[in-house]
Amino acid sequence: MDTSKFRLLHTMIRVFDLDKSIDFYCRLMGMKLLRKRESEQGRYTLAFVGYGDDATDTVIELTYNWDQKEPYVLGAGFGHLAIGVSDIYGTCEVLEKEGVKIPRPPGPLKFGTAVIAFVEDPDGYKIELINRN
Image (tube, rainbow, N blue to C red; front, side, top):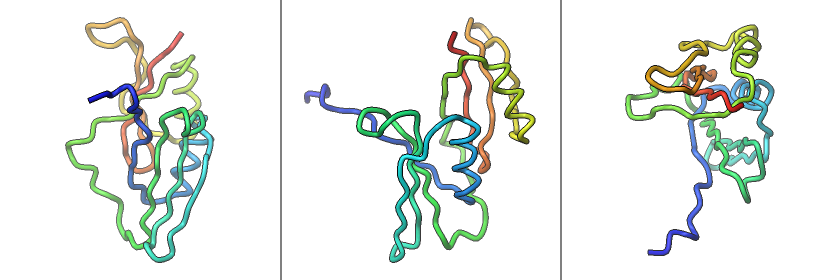
């Protein structure tokens, strides 16, 4: 099989409050809202966010199911998303002031050289921030 024509397109996560999630990923994490589509018949809204156009870059699909009455149970299989940042300490300081949960403050990776942190989006999904100097 020729995998040279394969490309990762997006990761989909279900969100409980679409506006909060779009605010988190766009305003706080610096992504852009690329497009949004509602399905009246399917009773859901899809919002695609990312750092570049999804024709060339991998993006995140935020799926909001209109009839969801309680936050989702995240389960044990999903790990985290990873985002590179140029100033991890400054980024975490801003996020903390915005009320974002930071379960693992920035610091060196155990047994490694990278500096990382973990933050949580409004639904509790873990996002690893990796300092990219």
